[in-house]
Length: 162
Image (cartoon, rainbow, N blue to C red; front, side, top):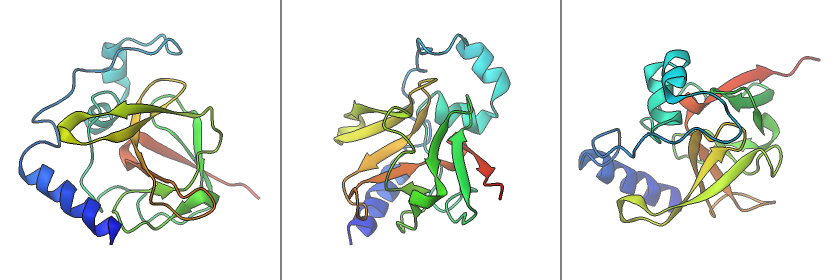
C-alpha cells in the first residue's frame, strides 16, 4: 500500500511538471573526493546520466535497465565506478526503480536531507564522487527496514564471476 502511495505521489509530481527538469536543482558542486569539473562530467556521461547523477534528476518508473534485473553481482556508480550495492540486497519493491535494503558499505553511500518539492526525504549520493543516486525510505524489508530507491541511470553493473 505504501508503494502505491509513493507511485501516486510521483505520478502527480510528474504530471505537474515538477520532476524531470522543469524545476531543476542547480548542478551539484564537484565533491572534494573528485577532481572532475562539471564540464568534464558532461563530456563523460550520457545526457540522461548527467541529468540524473549531476542535476539530481529522476528517470520514469519502470523504464530503467536495472529495475527488473536479476543477475548476481555488484551495482556500481555510473559516474566513478565505486561499488555501491550488491545483488544480494536487491529486491522488488514494486516502485519501478531498483531497490536495495542496504548499501554494500555504510561509507559507500551518503545521506543528505532533501526538502525539495514540499516533501521531506533523504537523498542518497555516491560518497566517492557526490553524484545523485536516488532516495532512501523507511519502508523496506528486514533486516534493515530501509528501501534505497535508485535510478538505473546512476548505476553500472559488474556480474559476479564464479
